[in-house]
Image (cartoon, rainbow, N blue to C red; front, side, top):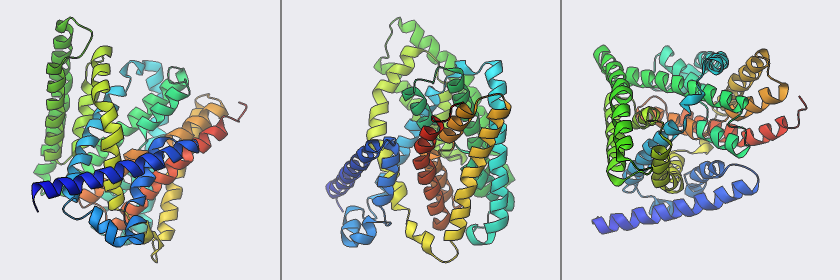
Length: 409
């Protein structure tokens, strides 16, 4: 196959992905759901769950095996950039002592309870779903991470649209979600390293390498970028700084992938370490956020959907575990968040509203599922279950939040 033929096939696949994601995303907004919910569903519809079953010949023609590596590259570059953006949008100034104390208590429960549910998942379904023979510890941590993760970008967007992101309750939600996601990513990185590492030394290498990267980003790159931007003497981002940021982003993604931590970790950590200078972050966001959200993320949703056949859930022995895991996903976030916020003195309304929003897994769950599949931690059955968890918890977030607004106090 010539380069031109490959280009045409990839272009056709991208065009279909963009069209379907835009249509389904618009329909989601029409029913008062975030656009990202529609795009997630569109990705599944484009895969063997629907498109592949209704039009198998056309499906094979639009998404031939030769196209998949290119979609994978586009999706993972986009994910690294998106997680970088997520990292830059975490407002570190919110991390004061009082807020950190409240958020720490809430986050502890919202992390510990999911891992308890992960333990029970291992006890109940280890033989059925742990087909790649992860250790009981590894399978428990993986499932606990899948239960503990929060769709941080979606939470931030809803809080902004509701104009409560600058309030105490909004700040508490953002800080708590940040803590939960950072802890979850670290634990997932540990499980990945333990699973793919050939020996003990490879795990030590991953931990040492990741620690060195974090220290380098925060104590070398951060002050250098801050000094360089300040020395420019202008309140805008020029191409030289922007190119260096992109170089660092690609370098961090490649390095963390080499460590066995997956490329998104590198993007996320670089975003966290970026100098919190308004014009610098705004300039970066203006240049890359739209293309990432409009093009790269839909490709990731589609790539995830192409690996997902929800019909597998109807197989004997799978639908029951899927429903129980879905129940664990709801109970492990909603109950501890609501209860701990009430114990902290928050109203029923605030407790229920924040618990409802933070129960959404969204894109983050899909990333975890893809990491598990890529590194041979899970099979396609558990992958499909996690995709279902991502869709259902995200779909339910806004209805539950709207219901919480009807609570008087």
